[in-house]
Length: 259
Image 1 (cartoon, rainbow, N blue to C red):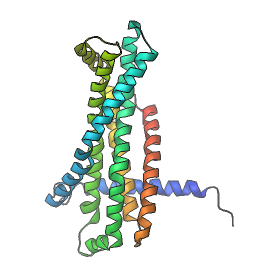
Image 2 (cartoon, one colour):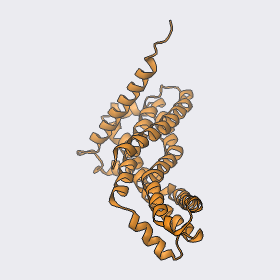
Image 3 (tube, one colour):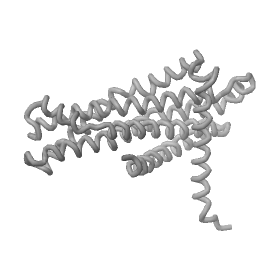
Image 4 (cartoon, rainbow, N blue to C red):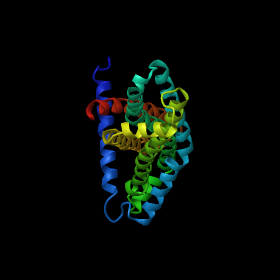
């Protein structure tokens, strides 16, 4: 029988609904006696923050300096002249804070943290560790899922801030080199003057949203792997594609909605 044209739409809808449920379960698991205030959950959450956030800081700083420098260099070449200085700086700050910082931080998490989470939870699933936790009365959501949500959401927020700071530094250096500004201190003040609260708010909202999406997709993929080790690699591939597409679409939606 020919497949229904609605089948892909229904599959996407089921995936979105499952991710929403996973996010709701994780947020609920963060509260209460056995939430993040629990010493064991807090220790696991700290480890995930170190892995997803702290270990990725050097890469994010490097990418931030390169992105900020290349963006200011390109804008300075295409829009030369003193009359364009303010517009060039404002455009660079807008692009770096609202668009580049959160999405590049999310891309770093997609290639570093998401595959590791899917593989780790997939192995736990295939070896029966998740079922063993439930049999012993331990909630797998609080012990396994919540720390990874904390790690990815906190990592996305922190890496976005790190990227933005590094991009501003790279942009200041490039602005001096291409002649947009002659004094580094004046360039720094110009960047800060054009960075307003709405830019920071937009970057923060996007970072948190990306972290929630990546955590829900990764945890759901890892916990839904059948008890077959050969099914883990395809789950990793599907998760990476879904995470990339979801973050790009969500970024476009939030850019349209946010002021």
